[in-house]
Length: 169
Image (cartoon, rainbow, N blue to C red; front, side):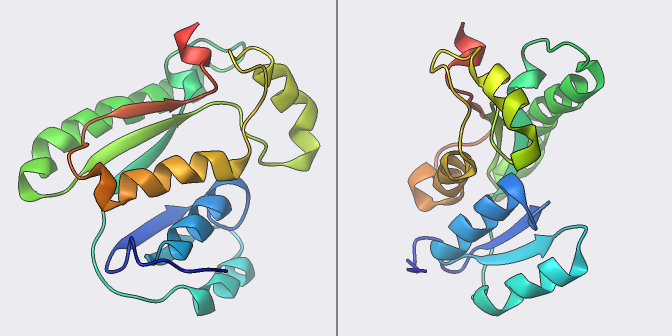
């Protein structure tokens, strides 16, 4: 794994980091030099991350939302409501914490291949996007890494759709 220093001195807390999208995000942020604090349900998998994650510093807050927060999905009312709440939380925290130098953003992900057993469902949801496909976890992780980086230094309070254009159509 090639490590850059773009996020050196930053700390990232990644929940759900032992599999799927969380794992991809944790690995991407670590490659960019961040200290990654890994949170997950499997303590053995969490411990396996520890050796490759070391530097010191501070970071921004990036919530992982979903396109379900802005469009309706059958049988997805509760899930969609929680993801829509993240966008509101992001705006409220921006008003509260950004004056102190903390940037807060949300990535509203579209269908993303996170589990092999869910491939058919992701394919079906992906077909509803403008790009006609689901995302790979690394594609979402790239946007998270950008938001955590100094390249996004003037970006706060945003909900960034990374959904293959689904929320636009």
